[in-house]
Image (cartoon, rainbow, N blue to C red; front, side, top):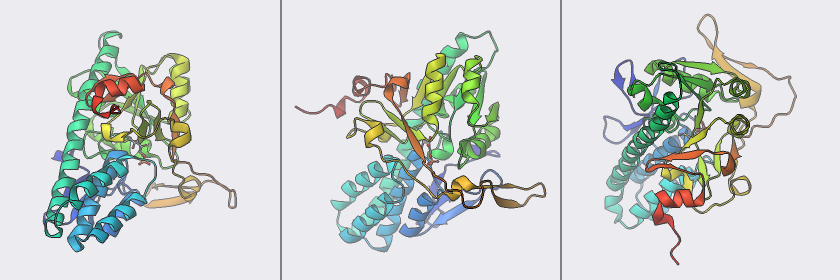
Length: 367
Ligand code: MRU
């Protein structure tokens, strides 16, 4: 997507031919900064500290992290160490495991001397495929927005509610939940996006709002608790969110608070869609609530808020009393029964095992 007319992805090989550059998302929305990754450790840190975040981008960064590790040492031990270190960075997004398994499978078979170049090429393929997948999700999802527009008075905007940031910043490009919005916007469908702020890290208020603002998509940032009220008053036509891991049965794990939006949508008859790139499906899991590991992060993300002061300084302040204990769960699981449909790169399907296998028959168990 473009920033001030210049096309960017969230991760790209640097001009030196070996290091990797990323948009440092911890600096947004108040500053646009590019960070350079030169080692496995820097790639792991970028994921853990959320300079990069969002399930697909975590996977692509991990793939480049393996390439950086192999450039320094292409032995079996180095490959194993890199995959183990990267896998330990964040537990919930399954794209991380998916990308590392793909890299390991591809590279183990090669002679050491060929591994580093092959790792860069494979990481670039992971990134390019992500862009294609998300553009296809955008096309399929835009059709749903077009259908919603047809049910409204001519020219009246379709109101879409989204949670967290599942836009181009969460992927290599386009986004998952926001891809249908960008494609619908391109197609001239009038729309407006309700952006959940998404405490504690505020990915909605700081990242989704920044993206939509740069792209000129009409939007309004709302506090996390507002969505239910808007749905009761007919002000949300549909919800679209992303996912960090979806079970083979269609349970969806996404940023904390997604489940509450799905409950409110269900109670108010508002369609609740999930943008789902296939690397985010965990075909080994069947019960999202019991099986998906939920990340718990540093409590300071709850106690502290960082923002820009009136005179332009970036400052962090504490919003809780000193000494109050806090808990910081990063994700929750929305059971499949609350999901209207999954928007994948191969089309839209019910959030069921049969629905997913209908689009991805290669995952049917071989008898
Ligand atoms: O903790 P984050 O910012 O990595 O969480 C991101 C999300 O929850 C997104 O909705 C999800 O990764 C889908 S991104 C296309």
